[in-house]
Length: 220
Image 1 (tube, rainbow, N blue to C red):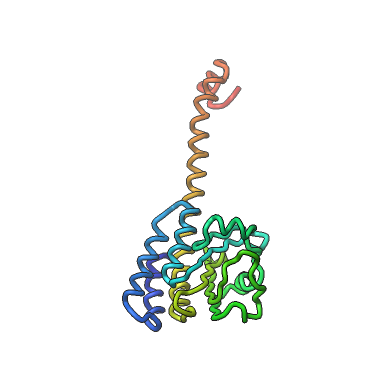
Image 2 (image 1 turned 30 degrees about the horizontal axis):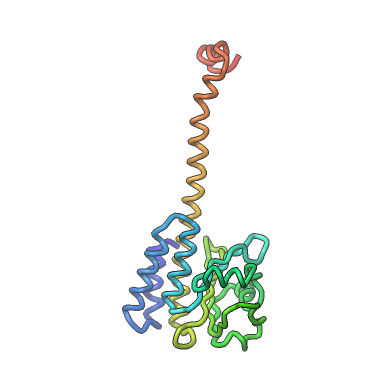
């Protein structure tokens, strides 16, 4: 699904839950912000920043799945470098985070401590109560999950879930575009290197070998 198709679907989806046109406009602005870059790392961070702003979450993260299972990267907003260092290693993708990995569907929780999958918080982790998570798909495959916690002013709503789900759709397109661009850059640099090496190889070849190329079209 391309961005124009997604926008049409989002407008229909939000019509039933959005309280104001302003909320829809905020979502469209977020679409533009996450779709404007081609650097994959910058795109991932922009997605998390846009998501936390849209649903008014104190903390947000994008957990990127690794091929063998679990989380390969965890991009956060709301947790500074000092606190992250005290918390230590990346989450292992267990508990509530793991539930989203094994069952990639939107998950909205009023109180994390009461959820059956909750395993508590590790040392130095800030307290978190409300939770909203949605999967991010790229070409139909789960790329990772958006995790939002601590909504200011209360629990996450059905509207928040619809908005975050819509943003996740745009995020999948943005990530796909950034990855294709990166692959294209690698290909371009390789072709440039090959093209640059041809004159050097030609200059280094013996004169007799060069003349045979001109006379026969193939090495003698």
